[in-house]
Image (cartoon, rainbow, N blue to C red):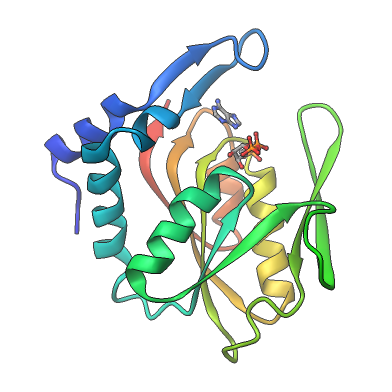
Length: 182
Ligand SMILES: O=P(O)(O)OC[C@H]1O[C@H](OP(=O)(O)OP(=O)(O)O)[C@H](O)[C@@H]1O
Ligand SMILES: Nc1ncnc2[nH]cnc12
């Protein structure tokens, strides 16, 4: 269940820091080097599978775009459905949306209103690659709960602990981070 120190190292070492991307002062955590490293990707996904296999989850919801990669893979391993939470204007059927603050301005994410309707009071795990300010994940958890489903936990590969995102999100749902960056 717990990652061994060695497994944690394998995952941590596979994530690349890119300084000043997309703008000066930001250290961008590049997970593409985790994804193309078969040992690191398998170590991570096997860990997530072992953590969540007994949670009685009905769906995984992944956040556009990097949350799709981990979320869809995990849903398939757990044998449950996957629901994409997308940036505004991308989903074709009836949606509900939630706005959230960016560093500059406002963005919005949406989910199909009937996305979790295959199961009454569906138990949903929210997943994304990273939590920073928590604005995106908070909006996503709100949307899940608005459909009548329940966000049981929010899972991130990386949590930036020098920001308040994790603390704020914990008021709404349980939070799990594989790695913390401080
Ligand atoms: O905690 P927050 O401050 O809300 O930031 C975290 C979000 O930012 C990144 O996505 P981004 O919006 O850059 O979209 P992308 O995955 O399409 O690149 C990341 O993948 C999270 O979804
Ligand atoms: N530092 C960062 N690295 C990658 N994605 C991010 N999203 C928000 N902050 C980020």
